[in-house]
Length: 541
Ligand code: C2O
Ligand code: CU
Image 1 (cartoon, rainbow, N blue to C red):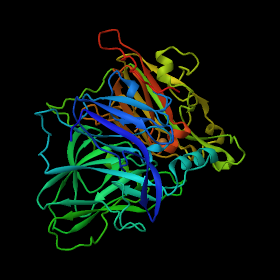
Image 2: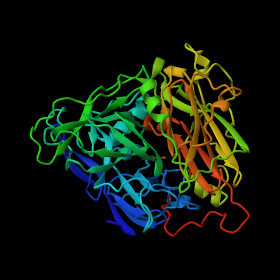
Image 3: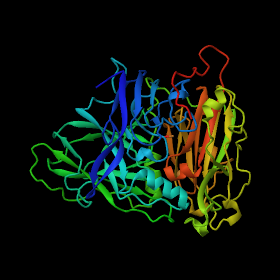
Image 4: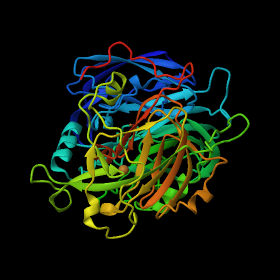
């Protein structure tokens, strides 16, 4: 139900999955956590009380938070963590978002279990741009580890190697009946024949882009990242961690039970991938048979073409009632090379490539967390917390997608460098994936904004030819976009939101290895163009 105020108690709760019980960090004892409900343009307050035993922060993924970075959440970027026993009241300011978003922990990898949906209805009296569904519900894809998430994080960072794969993928917190001991841990969606349902699909997985499908049913995509899209019918969906996709499901097949299924899309050949499938059940009321027969078709685990093919079908509605506003005259051109790298092992026992530790970078800078958060340092003019020389393009131009790139390209610089943007500047970023260490897809996420995805391609970006292919007519407005392995993607946005805003790869291993940059958007001069002052009770470092 709609509410202007919520209480979130972060606490350890015991859950049984895959034949064993463990304590996980939850909000209000729920996994996945509680759903927030609001209408477009609402402001909601969440009183957070950390009753757990670790430092934590919470982020409202995809909420632009106009002029209010104070409640945005990434630790050491816009706030210091909420310590055990401490409280923090966060203000979530919605503006043009309408559809589905989600919230999650933004400290280490706590978001594995600390996350939930945000449902944003149209304003009072307004309607969906499609026939009102009979019912609607969030479908959250996730991952389950048998080991403790804090331990998984510590081990991964200390060993410098790849994290262990999760032990199961999840649909609404449940692995489904193909995993051991999971027959009853299967999410069930019950429908009436002849009715239409709105599924608010969210990928909360920590390390994987996912493919999703429902046996015998095509679905109609009607939105992504809290923005409506031109409807299209599809038999499978690709969804990045961080992304949301709204789907209409017509219950128009013979009234049996059907499998809903999801599995990982793993672009990198290097990582030993987990090829298991999570399932849920679509059950027709008054169905005749009880066991679903077959899994839906899902593309094979490394099918980059299938992934890109789905993503490139997303288009803005771009009609009279849903106009778009793509920047045309670009004042700030940025070219960001995204790389997986290595750094010397600090302990002599690293399990990364050639005994080094993994790192990752944007334009050869691998983020090092500051000791006080960047927002506080910026607002209160604390010197020395960060530098302002984030490079606009990689210091070395090389053939980014070539095979066998020389080893010396692998070592990034470490630093806490921000990129400063003038108020209202029009920004274009070309993300270029590189083939260092085999490359990977990178679901890039920007806080504080939605951006238009105007172009994409495989191979090296060609600055003369590729801009001619840009879609400036109906590009989708996203907050997360997967840059395909050995390919590029171009986004545009207007820097009209003064504040401090994090941008990073939403695969948590890449984020923690340093594939991050912080934007500082300066205040404007006019009324209402300045950052809000800090609220009472920001958590101290
Ligand atoms: Cu969904 Cu920076 O996060
Ligand atoms: Cu990445």
